[in-house]
Amino acid sequence: MDPYSVIIKPQLSEKTMNQIYDENKITFVVRRSANKRVIKEAFQDLYDTKVVGVNTHITPRGNKVATIELEEADAAEDIAVRLGVF
Image (cartoon, rainbow, N blue to C red; front, side):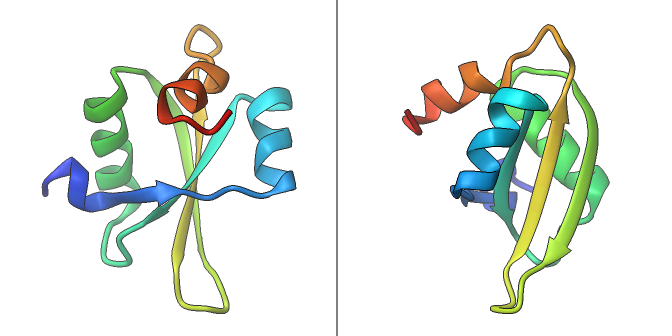
């Protein structure tokens, strides 16, 4: 599956911004049919980082959201800056 079709956009809220700073995690809205393995591979391909784990859930609006935990060497802040979040 094409990485650009798996990861749709960053999910931004006060909670997700705190996760970027405190827990080295970044949150994205992803394609609903994507599983954790596909999300992990797509993220690693797009951003050249190592992923420790992926947690997913479906929001009440029907969007699938993935919280991606990065290794300590790869800062979620750096990726957020590259995305233009800050």
